Image (cartoon, rainbow, N blue to C red):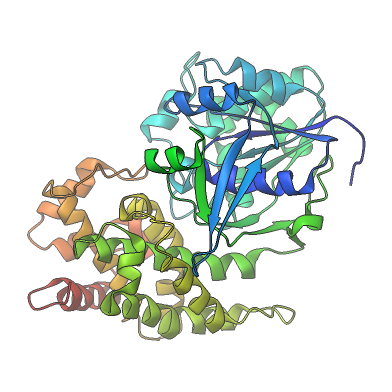
Length: 457
C-alpha cells in the first residue's frame, strides 16, 4: 500500500449513499494523507452540492438501529465539492492529476446499461448521446472517458476505478461495459491505456440509506443532513493499482474474492428488499418497515430466501466462507423492520428491469438447472408484474424511475392479452430464460396466488 502524502480519491455520484458509506469510512480513518473530493457527472443534484460546498463538505449523519438507538456523527471527510457543469472540467482536472489514485462512483444499478449477458446496451438513449462527438456526457462511461483521456495525455499514471453500486461482480461488469464503450467510441489508444493502467476491484457495499426529508434536515439543523441505519458493511477485492487508504483499520474487509459475500447480499438482501417494496405498494403501504411487519409479505420474503436462495448459495460456498445464511436472512428482515429509517417503497421499487435480471434471475436459473422448484422465487417477478400494471394504469402515487426499462416495451407487456406470457417472454428481464415454459408456469401460478382474486395483497 502506498503511504506517500497528498493522495486523492475522486468520487462521482455525490448522493446520500456515498455520504453514508465510503465517506464515513474515510471519516473514521481520519488519514490526512488521503483527500476525498466529490462531484456529480450529470445534472439534478445542484442544490445539495451547493449546500455541501457552503459547509466545506461537512454534514450531519444520524444512524438508527432496529432497536431505536440513535447516534449523530459530524462527517468531515469530504474535503472539496465540485459543482456540476456540462463539460465536467472540474472532475477532469482532479481525475487527471497524478495525485488522484482512486476514482470511485455510485450511479445506481441501471447506470451501467448492461444486459443480462453483460453487454453494453448501445441503443440506450444515454449511451447513444455519449457516443456522439462533443456531446455533454450523461453516463459514467462518458465522464470517465473525458477524465482518463486527459490523464493519459498528462501521463497521470495508474489509477483504481472503484465501483460502489449494488451490481453483481460490479468491478468486472463495469470494466467490460467501459471497454465496450471505448470500442464503440473509436478510442483504441485510450482503451489500451485503460487495460494497462487501471484496476477495477469488485466490491460489496451495504447500508440502507433513505433519501433525506426536509423534516430530517430541520431536526438535524443541517440542510445536508441525512439518516442511515446503524449497520455498515464493505467487502472489497484488494487489487488497487496505485495504493489505497488503510480502510481495514475501520472495518472494511479486504478479500481475494468478493463473490460469496456478494451473492449472499444481492440475493438475500437486495431481492428481498424489492419483494417487500413491490408487495407493500400493492397493499397500499408507503414504507418498507410496514411491509416487513405484514405477516403475509414477510412470509413471502422469508420463504423465497429459505426455500430457493439458501440451497443455491450453499452449493457455491468456498471452504473458508463462514457466513450463517439463515442468521443473515433474519438480520436482514430485522433491519428492514426499522421504522425510524422510514425507507420508502418508491425508492426501493425503482429499477425493476435491472433488479429482476440482476438479483432474481440467477436463482431461477440455478434452481431450474438443478431440476428444482422455483415456486418461492417466482413470487418476486409476479409481484413486479403486478406493480408494473399499477404503473401502466397511472395509479402509482409517485413517478416510477427505471433506467433499463423500455417504456413502449413495458406498455406492450401490460396491454397484452396474456400479460404474464408477454412479461415472461421479455429478454431484458429474463435473458435466455425468456418464454421458458417452466418459468411461465411458475410465474403464472404465483401471480394468481399473490395478485389474483382472493389474494391477501
